[in-house]
Image (cartoon, rainbow, N blue to C red; front, side, top):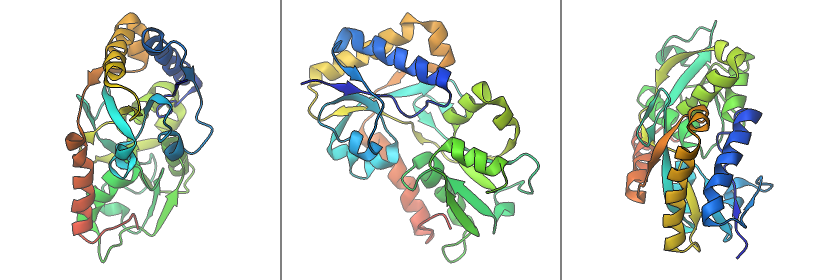
Length: 263
């Protein structure tokens, strides 16, 4: 089979996108040199389900809501970023630097921004932390879907929203590469932790290739320590779907409060 590969999740700046592509090329060099590195030109939910997908990165929420039937876990990156502990990560809840929000409670009745309905970091983890504060399934006055964490931060900075939960790895990359945007927002609180964004392969990839990919990830990390530092990569863990059930736990705890959606 002619394989494809892509790392679409943390391309916060063009420089980071180039580093991720070079890192992926090193991973593939020893495992599947004829694999095509591609930019996903179709919805990610469709892309991740392709039978010819050798390796890509997804979010834990769609993984636990059907995607696990089509892919297998390869590894979970460990990042050097505030809010990360081993393969686990949290979201940092941000507001406008000169805005009125100084705690979660003071954001009641204001506008929330989030990247996607199926995002663990932007939606699910935030829903979980807001749920105990909700009343009759409501807390915010308006919910704005922005399409990306950068979009959510831009909405806050531009006074189109008041609060958002941002993947802590993304926020670290924003501080590294987009200082003006970083300075326009400030931290309010943190969500609880859950396993980070996993690297996955199609279920059609054989076990020996998956093991080779795991070795190649470690080799690519060691091959260029300077690049690894720019990517904030410390290593990789091998997790199971049982570990990722933590994401469903966060969801179920929010639902127990009757808080089914950000509202």
